[in-house]
Image (cartoon, rainbow over all chains, first blue to last red; front, side):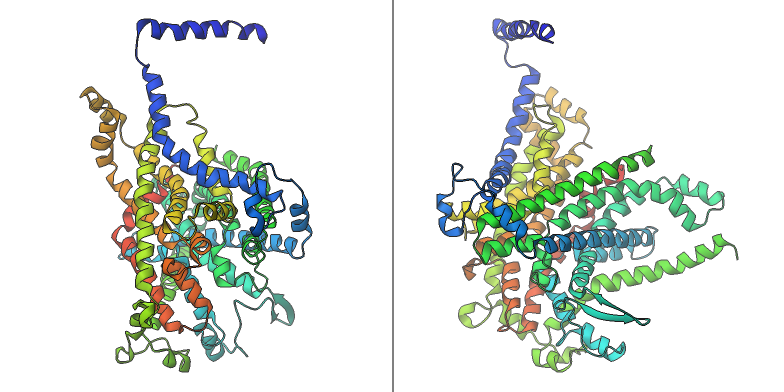
Length: 336
Length: 288
């Protein structure tokens, strides 16, 4: 190894000497390099200052005992300790909150992709008013989250919500269901009694409603790029629509579905707004991000909040690693 | 009837059922919002199950209450609208100023670290914004930027620049490089080429991007909550609505009017540019 590296400095020196000797300005390549960095520098600066540094800072805060009162004393040279992590990992409700986050994320991701797929298949062919319907379907996704959560809250309210009023009037419910504030709802179906996690299911339904347009957009774009000959050939062979879907469209859509699963999983896992606005984290819907917020604003415990947020990010990385390890290669294989 | 024709007929019918269902499910909450916002609260509480009230019962009192300043006994949403508009517009302009050269660099110029840039952007998405919120909360408190709309704007830029660069880069890569080479032969400098050749060609993408960034900033809630909650004069509309809907002082129909006011600008933007937006968002998705 050492011998192959040895001639390099000499070569480099020679190369460097040449341009100065000829008094040539920067080469095209160097110029491009400089321009590239210069054009990107505002982006880099802002991302580094507002994203990268805070992330590193959070990692630092997670290992120091800091509360809002003494935050001014926080510094890189502070006392490092594992006390926060210990506090977080052993605090009551942490593991159940992580579990809630996982159920919430997987449920919302799967449902939003499923509904997005159904919507994309239905709105694929042309018909009069398709543009309008397509725009309508995108509404839940683009509308302000505060407005839509508020409408859902009112619709589902046990006192004057439309859902409960119609449910008791037309569906024969004995009493109003507190969709957003009831942890468990005893449901008896065919003589079997199960406790349904009502609030959590409602929040998942909301997520599916709000984010299926996102999946729909991507899936529809991919569907429209599938070459028509493929389906025509299947039709000639006498394939029924369900067979065409399974054998032709689904393999074509698989990479997009895989991408969507990752995107939606990451975004939902980190989500704060929706749960906070709908339930405030109560009734068995306390996801980790809402817990972090509680630690930060109610207890002013910055160290514990940072440690908790870090655990959330670490959990996400672990899940993504598992996903990439076990699922991504299989999808690539299908493509080939 | 064989399987093929049975399925063709079945899915033919199911398709319309799904389309009708989709329209109802997506539009219903918005229609309900609109209908509730024009009804007097007493009437809603008396008949919670009633969906449609005739125009004769409609009132615009709710809108008047939500928009008039707090000093005059209203909820002061006009002020909040102005705050939201200011933050969103500033975030949009600044994001574009940062991301246009950035996306050009990423799509056209070969520089050291070009391949590594996307790891930086990944960080924005991989880490929960609540994780960024803690140090930013501390940092902005120290700098005195917490509680200021300028501080919030800076955060929004950082949140939107990566997606903006991603969208623009996809579009820029469809513009043939030969055009820029021709401009270079004509003696244009790189900046002139960007301004006079690339930007006019990328105008639809830039426009779509601007609207997208505006919508993100307008809809944002968490950072507004963390940074602005103390002073009502600084609230954005989203924050105002969320804060007031938690209490019982303001009637629900007035808040519905507030929701309409919050949603309306987004609806207008969306309908004006639906095509631009959907194409910009999924650019590259059809390439698999």
